[in-house]
Length: 142
Image (spheres, rainbow, N blue to C red):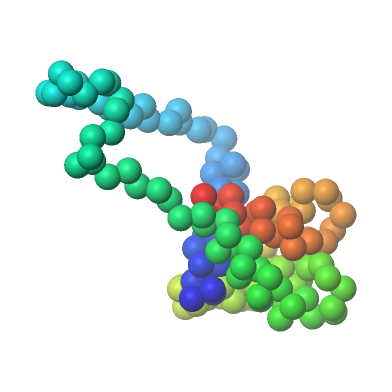
């Protein structure tokens, strides 16, 4: 279950990396205006008892929990951080779970790992802390 949560976050985060690389970005679509209420007693914007308001689950919490649990497995040198090799190995394994066509040693996967690592390494110290990894993966999960 945790691997699936992490994988979903990785896929979303990698999509963000790819989107950031696109030179031409289209503006976001504007939502359709809400239809006026038929009930004149209900003020505009009010929620009536028969309406459901969806509250999204805190995806970042799931990501943080998964990172805390899985991080030691991929921190092969035990220094409390992930270098690019450790990070790419973890992300490759997660991608391979849902897409068996992913070639772990391919140049495409290596390039993706390099780009994703550079995006996640916000302080540019060439290693990822747990907090950097959680922030990176949570971007795509939210």
